Image 1 (tube, rainbow, N blue to C red):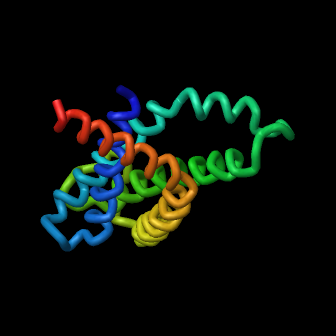
Image 2 (tube, rainbow, N blue to C red; image 1 turned 135 degrees about the vertical axis):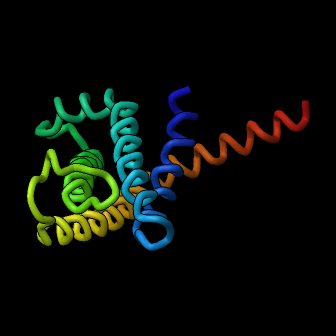
Length: 154
């Protein structure tokens, strides 16, 4: 069940994030609310992978931990920080959602720069993340296709 949820959730996050990279594709309110939703879905993704996160965290400095797992962990940590920066900076520059209780005063151009940088960082790191997980992704897609063929024969 968890694998199916992740198989649906991950493409939603990826496609949603790609669509949100250009705020002018729709009303600004869609960009702002959609961005908050994508950040929330990212947190759900991390919760679904909590056992892995906990396991690798306890072994992070062990010589037995493979370099690939360590790299995945570091990339996940960078993604977590970048998504947090996207959410925080997005709230700092929001125009259609009132976050003045968090950010009183005028909009600071610093937040706009952080927002753009963190967004591009996520795009780059997700590309590497997908590349490192490509065998897993391909295996899951193959499993789903095989299941569809079996269901069609019934």
